[in-house]
Image (cartoon, rainbow, N blue to C red; front, side, top):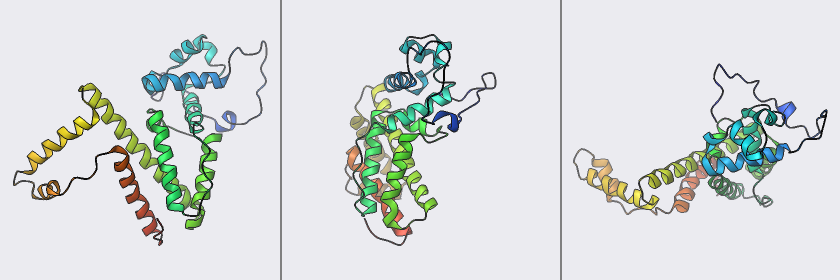
Length: 250
């Protein structure tokens, strides 16, 4: 869902008009559908075919209305994207209450975010285009701020930590999804593709041109399990945050 070009300018997203709970008055007959139905249709299309498949025309066809009728529910594609992001942000169980062990609680948040993004593989790319925070995203942010209170970050520092962790998860899941698609195009599993890459690197490392890589490849291999890899990288991030902030809680 790329931004509009100069021939298709849009007023963009107005958060003050988008998120208020008060109903907007309408003239004439009551609407046949709802904004929630339109959003659900867009999410279903993105889940099945990717973000690029979400157009006003494709969503209108799925809902069963004309394209122009769709604009009475959402004014533009940018607004639709915001609605999609916030809808799936609420597609998670209620989080556990903070325990006071902020790094471990943050680890649970990161794993929950990864699970969410794996269920909706378009979400990492969509987050880079987000312009506002809807109710579900605000609830997530409030919970994450509560988790970080024992760490003693100032308010803006805590927001930066949340952004850093969510950004890490989005980047990692984006890579995982890309690898899955590359493997599928090659007619292999992701593991088979990783094993082929490992064989190639071991062969390359035998050359005297790469002494450091050779030493690395001679070390015992770490687990290639995707969950273990994610958790190992996440631990590096959390340990770095703890060390930078002057605490070694894990």
